[in-house]
Image (tube, rainbow, N blue to C red; front, top):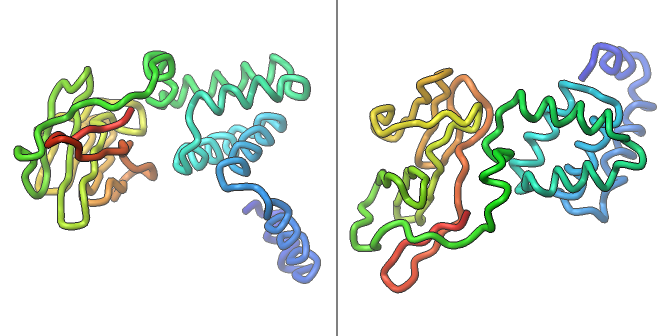
Length: 208
C-alpha cells in the first residue's frame, strides 16, 4: 500500500473502507483467474512496472498460462496499443520467466512417462532428461508431487548436487525450496513449478 493510501486510511477510515469493500465485491461473479488477468491488463494500461510484475506472478500462481497472458494483451490491443504491449513484453523478457520461454509456449501440453511406479521410493526421487526435462519428485502418504528443476526466478537449472535432504537451493541467487511442498523458503517468493501427475498402468505420468 502506498503512503498516500495509508494516509487516507488514517484520516478518512470510513470512506476508504467503503472504497475497498466496493473493489473487493466488484468481482464477485468472476473466477480468480479472470480477475487476475484483468489486474495484469490494468497494470499494463497504467504502465505500472512494479504492479505489473506483482500481478503477473500472482496470475501465474493461480494457474493462468503464459499463452493466456499474451492472448489477453492482444485482446486488449484497442485500449493498450502496440507501445504498451511492447512495454509489457520487454518486462517479461527481463524477468526471464520459464513459462514465457518460446519452446515452452509453442509445444502442445501432453502426458509424459516419468518412471515406473515400482521404482518410486518414499521421499525425494530425481529423474534426469525426461523428454528434455530434469525433475524432482516427492512422494509421501498424501500423494506425489512432480517438480520442474528450473528455478522460477530466472529459469536456472538446479541439479541434484544442490539437494540436501528436502531442501533444494538454486546455485544462482540461493533461492531455497522445500520439496515436500514446493514452496520457496528463503530469498524468493515463487514456488517450484509443480506438474499435474497420475499413476496409470504401473507408470508415473506428468503433464506439461
